[in-house]
Length: 202
Image (cartoon, rainbow, N blue to C red; front, side, top):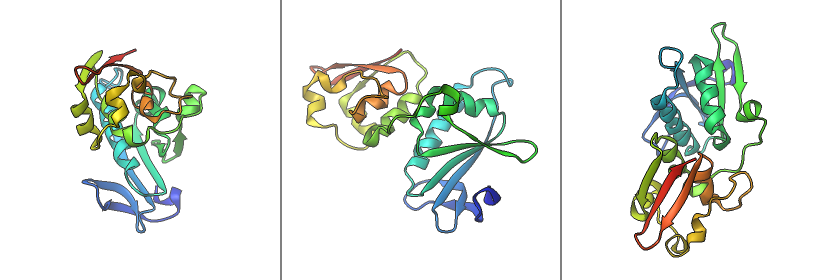
């Protein structure tokens, strides 16, 4: 990847994050990680690995680098599977595949789905990443639990108006919060009286 980006890359810890990244330029303008993953028995969907990728994407999005990337080895299907399901959410993070001959290919969700990725979920991206890692069909979170995931308080309107939790099309909505659940295929059903939200997988 050093040759691809044209600068030396080495393992380095990014300031302010509890993570040592595999491929970082000296000025920290380029930050990336290498993942060598395979499908279960090289055939089956690996839920834990999908969650692992979501976690790395989320951490990379937190870096101030101008170029953020994941490079995959072993099976291109793992990266393509994640991009096909969730890649529209990973707009700041570039995906690459390093083939056995050393050839590097850029992977994008738009190429897989024919869709243009929507804008990010802003401050609600930690909730998006958390939901991406869930395998159940239904989850109930209290407002306080959501705030713990976000590391920030929900706005007053989230506790007062059901409309704040509207399930809009994440590609069209201007409400960043809905992209956190709708972008991953979840719907939100708030219960303001109980101060909780039921998320249900589509």
